Length: 552
Image: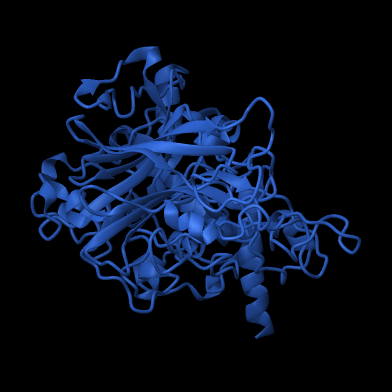
């Protein structure tokens, strides 16, 4: 990796746009930890982070999780979510997966930024009566094949290797429906259980709706809590649902050369493909440079009639904060192996602007540049030969059979599958001395907002929590606790997030704990926050910590 500066002379060409499209990704991974919001569009984690995905929510990746299965430690679980901000009462059509898209989870085992294993879900709609009915269901639904379920979806699941060879794992598999409510689906847990399906080579999979596991407080955008900086601790995403695909497979299925003992580290990300979609400056073809296949052994057609990547997500809090609107869609179409070719990326990661702003406004010292610790966390994985964090944790360089000459910096969520699940997980992951947590993979309870904010302010360099930021945003757990067995994600919510009554005419949180007001009537900003939010979030968090320190 070279750290040369940006060329002095650069034309306003497509080449420049392609460069800028990726240049924000890793600096963004550092700065995004503060708020999780785009400069001019609403988002939380990667919810609605770019213009194209904001207008195409069914293609919008929101979060990716990768962890050794706590109840089956010989397996690894991969979870990816789409279609954010699902108001539970959003009938009559509710929230199906797109039937004209591919949903992918990709695994890089050798560190070259290209997928060695790709799991792909493709959905098909089924309507029993579309001529004389408008309802999602016409009665109480007791099974996934119930005649009362007027609309349902099935999917095919395939796995593609690094050579483009595709194998079908499941056909016509039933997806769990949207949770219409207690009257329609009084035992939704039973429906969820029916949608967990075994895989022919071991493992299991699930597709359906779930409570959004991401958690943070976004109310800071209401003029810094209306001037009262003690008002933190409200999970703004509480009560909303997402669409989830999850897969649990033996570790050997995703490890390099099928050997998870010698090669335990993988890099994970998810993507969405649409047929015929064109993204300016993207340069991508098909599901992965045209290698994926529609049928076993047959390659996809390239060009405008092929599949194009329109959304991408690896580490949380990436595309929304730094990448300008003009380039967000181009980043979503970029493949990780191209990240290393962008010279400005390294410069922005090594010398991020947010710590300097915090220091100038609030006096919290910014760690000295160059920030090679951030490069290591987000681009290369953590290993003794990777950078200043003197530990071997989750770089693909640690795999015994890796050709190190082909390992490239790439933005991926990296997991060392040899690290055993923690008996008592710490929400701060590695910073909390829990090596089974983020940034070594990501569990559903990992507090990635607080973790990344700590990393931004130098905690990874010292190995100690920055005291001024210890409380974070005071939102420490998901709205609904994850389950203890696959697919782990919590059951979807049914109460209206913005439920209003005579006491709360602007909405309430008594039902879904999301809504537009807090329990004491304090207005909560909608998730459609606007420009300037990232700086306000930094300012609010810093000032809050300083005020509390002064009161102590």
